[in-house]
Image (cartoon, rainbow, N blue to C red):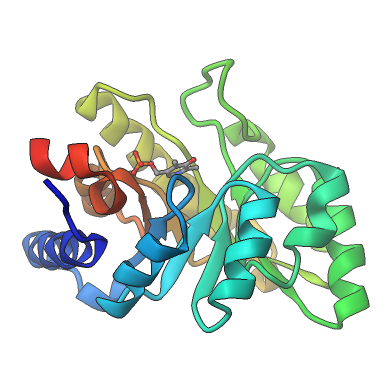
Length: 234
Ligand SMILES: *Cc1c(COP(=O)(O)O)cnc(C)c1O
């Protein structure tokens, strides 16, 4: 059965709205980043026509291509960062979710300075400590913020994490820990750093409900919008 990405998007938005109500949160306090990494521009356009404005890509080539095809949308980069591709990401991505090394910050700063912009980024944190996951460790966060503050063309807006899959209770714990880390960073970092830390990017198709309850300000949803199997099974 063919499912239009626009109708899947609208169904998701209704669910997000209901979850916000349940969690006593304003609907506009949550940004839905539609992760379009597995689909082409045709599907992106279906979602865009239904009202999706923010899309997430995890590869620089796809980001460049789709950004060119739909520059009026907002594009986020959510994938692993390779230093030599940073120049392709900076400026095209309104927000880079996955910064997890000071060399990324340095290179982003250099590219953003050349474009005369301040690049917004999130710091990816490996909350669960799984070896297969990228991200800095929670105890490195304050030092990282402090060091990154010297790079004036990089603006750290908050944190991102990936939860372990398949265990909603554990995922929720990870999300709550990231929310706690944000509070901790805001109360312990220099005021000029702390005042910009507002975003929590967490939650995907299977666990965004948990993330939203824990305080996510950005949820990154791919399959629930773009996969026909996901939408017919759920
Ligand atoms: C693919 C991806 C998502 C979306 O995952 P779904 O399960 O398809 O919703 C979110 N975040 C990152 C970093 C991803 O790579």
